[in-house]
Amino acid sequence: MAVNDALAGTHKIIEEAKEQQGGQLVPTLNDFSQELTTLNLGPTHPATHGIFQNILQMDGERIISGVPTIGYIHRAFEKIAERRPFYQITPLTDRMNYCSSPINNMGWHMTVEKLLGVTVPKRAQYIRVIMMELARIADHLICNSILGVDTGAFTGFLYVFQEREKIYEIYEEVCGSRLTTNMGRVGGMERDLSPVAIEKLRKWLKEFPAVMKEFEAMFNRNRIFMDRVVNVGPITAEKALNYGFTGPNLRAAGVDYDVRVMNPYSSYEDFEFDIPVGTNGDTYDRFIVRNEEIWQSLRIINQALDRLPDGPFHADAPHYYLPPKQAVYKNMEALIYHFKIIMGEIDAPVGEVYHSVEGGNGELGFYLVSDGGRTPYRLHFRRPCFIYYQAYSEMVVGTSLSDAIVILSSMNVIAGELDA
Amino acid sequence: MADPTKEESPAAQETAAALDPTAQQNAQVLALLHSLFGEATFTDVHEPYGLLTVTTKREHIHNIVAGLQQDETLKFHFLTTMCGINYPENLNQELGMIYHLHSLVHNVRLRIKIFFPLADPVVPTLTDLYATANWMEREAYDFFGVIFTGHPNLRRILNVEDMDYHPMRRQYPLEDGTREDKTDLFFGR
Image (cartoon, rainbow over all chains, first blue to last red; front, side, top):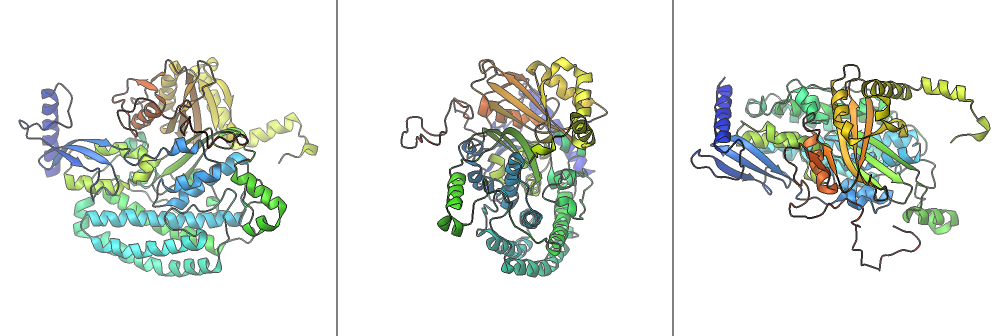
């Protein structure tokens, strides 16, 4: 009730301020007669976890309007991609949502495979599923533990970061790198799951659930935490859809849209898992949905690992899949293919293809227009962060500054994905 | 790979198309589009990789998206993404906007394209229908210079505000045009 009164008061102040300024709020004006304060949240602020600015107009502790400025780390990926052969675009996708790079890599590879008509063998698809779900867990772990940090609970963050480290060690076994993974190839994986990787994975699968349980025990019913997040920044399902929300943020609002189920890719139809949904789309729901998704991802990884089929780990597509390095040194044909692929002289059909995968933050889409040349004619990334972050300025109106920080981190806005 | 020795008869192909659920759904959507907005509104209807793609004129785009949003049978309630595109060699059709719509209820996707001249890049806004169109249109304005009439806040979004060109247009090559050390006679662009 008190919250509603405060909100009504704020709305009245906003209306009055609007009238005084000719129907429009000027966000950068310090209006002392109204005692409004302009506050620059960002571009570099420890609580934004990335570089983006919000110019907030405050009435005391209440936010009256927020004007977001983005683009601080815009790197022109769509333009650069117009001059890169397909396999050179994979490292660009790494740097979008850098908390879950393997999902971006594989989403891009699957887009190219769809264009080229390459069928990937089951084993490669299952390995992809394992790596993508590991990436989702790493992504959600960061988001949820940082939400804890922003509410003053540092312990959970430090605790689950150890687990993220172990996930990165598994990445290292599979592709050699950790954060910007550049994992896989067009046509499959660059190497098979090694016995060491499988052993590390099995060990982690055995140990992680206990940690996750402890993490949940620390937060889920924690009075202090709940006071900070319950009913903070709610969004209705209609509004979330209208704003183009996808992923955990949309599911927290109660819409069960998940690309993995709606348009299964990479054999997701083989696995049994649930889609958790929330009820009123507030910060607490977003937190709980992400936690539950971690459990579901674990279920998928366990199923995929137990039923991992035998067979090749990449497609038999010599025109598109790089030959093994040893063969390149000894075998003329392999050398020719290696050269052709590296120079981008592959026969790409003329056409356009849209492919989307369920990224850490929602529907990550790739719209590729090919004119048959060695590079895409046009490549557009549907970046979930960019699309749902525009709702932020509406969601923070009427809340306090400390709530705005919590809403921001629960939405998991990743600057790299925001700005491309 | 199609086997040339096993040429299927046209009738067999038709039954195969009728059995394919994606093709069936696309046929339904197309029939609905034709009944709502008239057959002449859409040109260049095709289904690359199973996604129904139609081209229309920019005068109709707002009506079509609004009509599809209100339609009770298919419920296209979700604007997945939109992006600009530039074909400098298509005279008077140099710029384009491509919209991806999604009906979450029936899981059908639809791609709508419009093309218009570079000299007159004016398109009606969709911000009154979809809140999400706001930043997407600002992005298209930023990179392609498409002007959306009725947009509440048409400013650059990712580039600096004092930039005086629209960088994703094909007339701006990625690298300095005067550089000669990177020209490659054999491998083109």
